[in-house]
Length: 475
Ligand code: HEM
Image 1: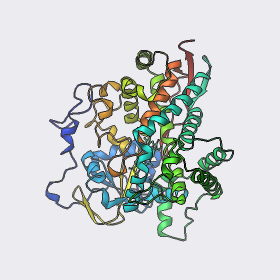
Image 2: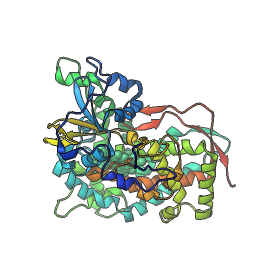
Image 3: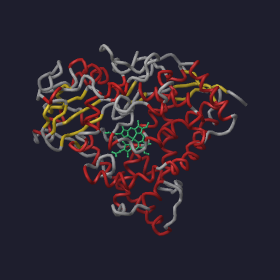
Image 4: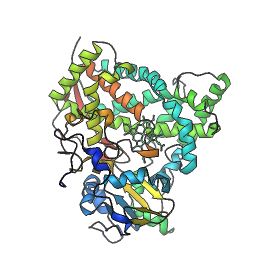
């Protein structure tokens, strides 16, 4: 640890902001340098074998080689930003010099050009048009659905039985998202169309990290990536257009997210039907896997820590006193939120994020040409011992002074930062807190066995399975 630096831990929780101004990434007077190539580059494959062997360890160890390192995915050169100060610069001061990069090119095929993939002025316009759908008063409305659906799921979990929570949670988060997007999700074709579309594997992260794919872009004779079967996407778009037609014909606010997307207007114009379908599809993808993974990790950590679980139970008993959890309870569920904050530090679903320079730009003294790919890893930053004391420990107490809502931006990045900050962040905190409260208000959870949970490293970091046993708390 550098002399004078302070980390987020039990003993020094508040010094992080002071470090944001400097840090190891700061390069004096913009002397132009080359980022060093990370050791272990293999002919043809580059660093891909290490990434495939243990991607989390690979990104975590890059910081030992400097604030910015070059790695190779096959022939493709990527600059990885390892310093939080440079990540801050990338996401804020220099944000306009970058679009989203390789993974998002692959995502544009199934997602269209919704908020997550759009770039430049188009992104800013869409962001302004989408923002009202995520206002606090709207989220307060969605909160009722989140609480009701989670409670309904929790109470049918028979005490004494064991379930793999991964598919259960996937069903729950999809159900919640459908009911918040569409006030009437019982449309006979909608659920099937969304489920069929979600089961098509798009493998965007795998493509971004594939040396074969990188070579096939340069050598057209190699068998390249073929877009997945377009049938499910076409069917989903058709169902959505039919629903949009009904909404437009009625012209009333149903309290759901779709009503807000259709009510856009003003200096930016309104979202067209095609844009609305792209945004809905983007939300299906962005708002399900990430929330499912976070809730699963939360239940995983809590079920293994009786003291942490007891403290949440005590808080729920005091705050809710037997009532279902609601939006108005969120400020009082302080410890529950601290636990979730720590879960998202240790297991950030979006573990690797990407950008691509759209014009010449200098970052940390390194000159990047248009087209240069840049990666940064919220996971690696969250486990950096210079930023967090005992980073591998699950310790919700480290958030007890700063307060979870004030978790420092740019060192705490589960939702990204800057102009591309997750638009669903408040939605996600609300859903996670209410779902966790609903499950734990009625059940005590223990791991079904002592087998370590396997982590799946894809576009999202998630547990492969989560077998838990439920126990009754009150009759
Ligand atoms: C725990 C849950 C979630 C996590 C960890 C998460 C994480 C993120 C991250 C890291 C980004 C920024 C990506 C980047 O900078 O490249 C992002 C963007 C985004 N997220 Fe989330 N997200 C979550 C939940 C949600 C939910 C519930 C929704 C919607 C219902 C959502 C919608 C979006 C959208 C539309 C963007 C693109 C924003 C833009 O580029 O302007 N997310 N999310």
